[in-house]
Length: 343
Image (cartoon, rainbow, N blue to C red; front, side, top):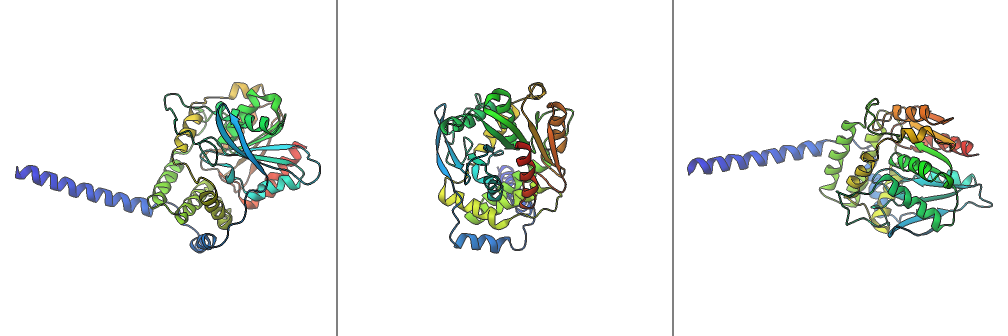
């Protein structure tokens, strides 16, 4: 009996030490935030937030799902429509305001929307792991938004997972697309001949999410997004706009529904079950632009280059000193390339 008690006692001590060590490991992990990050976040929290929604908003019905959208119209006559499709786990607020502004100032109507499972769109509480939705299903959400706004054709622009959804749109709904721009994305994320998504980067993102989510607060959520951007920046030296990113996060928490902790797994499932789009991309007749950062630590640039090699007459832009991100400093270069490409 004494042996059993001692065994249980030592096992308990071992588990406590293990949890303590794991806590220290997680707490000490993740990238170091800039020195001014704490003060900047605190100022954002205590001061009035800017209004980040500038256009017409509403909901589209996509096979029974409510999909929130915003449509920002330019001054004067529109030169066309640009539909923005965000990356994994992110909603419409993930687009940098300066990025949207660069297109509206050039005369384009810009539409962004919340993916299913994010933002003000339906959160898919009845998600079935045995019967998950696909990237093509998510592409149908974008079509529902265009239908609701009465838009026949748009220039489709997607980033990361959004680039994959944009490819699905171009493949399955070519008559609804004027052009395709795919940024830091892939035509086959599991291509055995190309370096896969970085497991190390994914692990760093997971540890960082745990670190800042244990004690959830507005400040920690802002830190989580800043730290994640630093990780996705890779070894590039681009600065992150701490103030703008913090405003976006706090706005999402206070003015919208915040962040869905379950959506990442849902979107990952959609991505990994999508398979290869290579054969379909080889037959693509749409004008296509592929953009990728040379320092992307998450989806290697080889994925972008493979798409260019497959898609007939595809244009490209390879960005020096850029990771898996759209830094403020590169927005003029990226947006100008896209605008000239569309023209």
